[in-house]
Length: 314
Image (cartoon, rainbow, N blue to C red; front, side):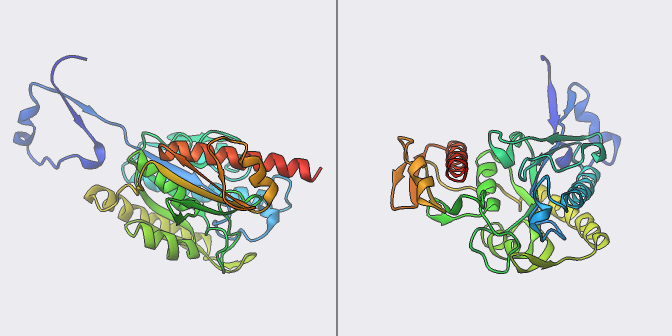
C-alpha cells in the first residue's frame, strides 16, 4: 500500500457537518477499520438455569438451556451490531462448547465451538475492540450463587492470580486486558456483578440475569425484560468505551499463579510439570512470564486433573 491514507475507527469517527470539514481529505485515501466485538458465553449464569439437567448434552433440560443461550446471544449480537460493531465473534464456552444453535446466528456473527481448545473461554478474542461476557457466575465457594465454581467445578477449589482469588470473570478479563481488550458488559448472576465486577472493574455495565437463592435455585426476570435490559445497557457500555471510561483490566507480569484442587491426587499430577511447586496436599503454584502463558499452563493442569479423575473413577 502506497500513498497517503487516513485510517478511521468507526466507533470514533469525527462528526463532519459541512463540505469544508472534508476538504482535508482531497489528497488522501480513507480506510475505515472494521470493528469487532467478542462475546464469551457460559451457561450457569444465564436466566432460568438452575438444574444440573440444564448443563449436560444428555440432560433432560439441555435443549431448554440451548434455547435460552441462543436467545441471549442473538439479542446481544443484534444490539452490538446496531451500536457500531460490524464483526462479532462468539466463543461458546460451557462444557462441550456446542451450546449455541448456529442456524439462529446473524450473518455477521462468527461462532467458536468445540472443546478442548487453546485459551478456552477467550479463544479468538485477540484483535477485538471490546468484550462482553454472558452467563457468567460467581467463583467457587460463593454463597447464594447458582453453580458457583471456578473454571472447573470437578477439580478446582480456588484459583489465585498474583495473590488475588479470581472468578472466571476476573481470570478472563485479565487475559483480555493483557491484549488491550476492555470488557464493557457482563450479564449473569447478580452475585458476581455485585462482587468481582463492581470491585475490580466498576466501569463495566452489569445486567443481572438472576438472583440466586442457593446453588440450585434462583429468581429471574421474564425474557422480555432481559431483552429490554440488554438493549438499554449496550449503548451505555459502548458510550463508556468511546469516552475511555471502559478500559482493559490488567495485573502485573510475570504472573504468580496458585491453584488449590479438590483432591490431592490432582495436585500429584500437577506437580509432574517441572515449573509447578507443591505447597500442601491440594495446593500448587507456578510462575509464568505472561497472562497468556499462565492461562495455558492452568488449562493443562485442569485437563491433567480431569485425566486423573477419569482413572480414579473408572
